[in-house]
Length: 137
Ligand SMILES: [Zn+2]
Image (cartoon, rainbow, N blue to C red):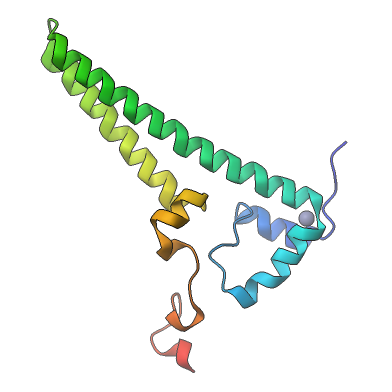
């Protein structure tokens, strides 16, 4: 049986953000953190989304390593049509690396916060998203 959200309005807002509140200013985050603490449904959905994010990063990493390994094997054994196979290996590696970067930039996975701290905590004095000078008013 599916659990019901304790506050559907807040739950719907969190759902549109994929249960990611890491980009919010700390004072705006309080209500959502409280909801995630008291609502098992939303907390479970948040865990599910972060698990998906981490899984995507791991899959992209494994894919990049596999394509790079394939490129190395083709380069070492030099089979017929080696040039096209090497090209396919490099293209696969480039695509995997691009996907890895895209997933890290688009998700609040723990690794992305470590690699790209600008997407994590935004200090309130930074004034990001506000017109110039509005943060100091
Ligand atoms: Zn909820």
